[in-house]
Length: 446
Image (cartoon, rainbow, N blue to C red; front, side, top):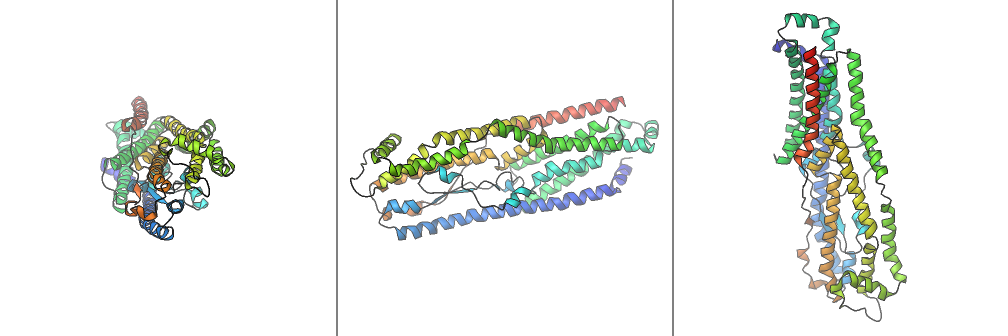
């Protein structure tokens, strides 16, 4: 019986079509991930070379004035791209993986990003996570919507219930064939992704595989639950497609609009204005007032006094510092609201597996908004370290030759993952289990 069901399944044109669609789009999604990783890795590799060239050129031009040299010098801080980002690109196409900062005011530099074609951003990326979250459910629906109703409509169900040892086992066999088919395709795609994207078999890669299979199981559970109501094939198809639209399209958009309205980020514009005014208005402000604020921020530099005549780098860099200090409140508020948005989205996503799966995959791949905010926070610490390194040398009027520039190579941000794996997979596991349980109870009654 089982072998006959398998032969009958693979004779269906929809099975061949489903296999072709998933494999073709799967290879396209892997190619998209490979292109993304290659582009990012090339930029990171060039940054390491270009910083060395940049320092060499600028030090030759401004040997005698360290203050002027550091006005121009940029130092790279790199957020490394994991090979898992090729599976789930997330927001990495929007957010820069490299911060090239000077020791001038920072807030105007942190949010600089790469120039990206807006049409490409509008279309989005066809990565493997998109394929799993959006397209795999449609294939699952197409394979399962008539698994019972077809037998009833053809009049074969009564024969099965009379002649078969167990109609329950018969349906489970048909269902298991479809599960195995989809699971094998997903496994093949992950195998090809591992080879092509050069992903090491790590714990994080295993986590992405597990959450993907849980998500696929969730859609099989929905199909199983719906078909157990013994409605017509057309009704099943409509109900399942409406479920897909609701869970994958409508609810995420609704949640996004709710979160955006709950935590509007008006501080972004205010911060930019205050950061610029905090610096530019100091040209017309009493120098002593500017220096007093600077000394309050850095009491260790209070021994450096403002010269009576001429231009002073002490005063100039104090002005730059005021740009950051006077926009700090708005900057902190902006960061807190973004983190609140992310936290609320994760809380809402616990009840909607498509959202949950996407957020979890982004977190694991290091392409989430939380990861980028952590990187920006680390950039602030990196920038502060540079200031504390160079301020005394500038104020002491050292020459450029007094600094060993070979020590200043691009630094790499070390990610700290604090996500709870059990907490992430528990909601989708419970929902899937309940759907299967109710479906089995309903089948037993049939």
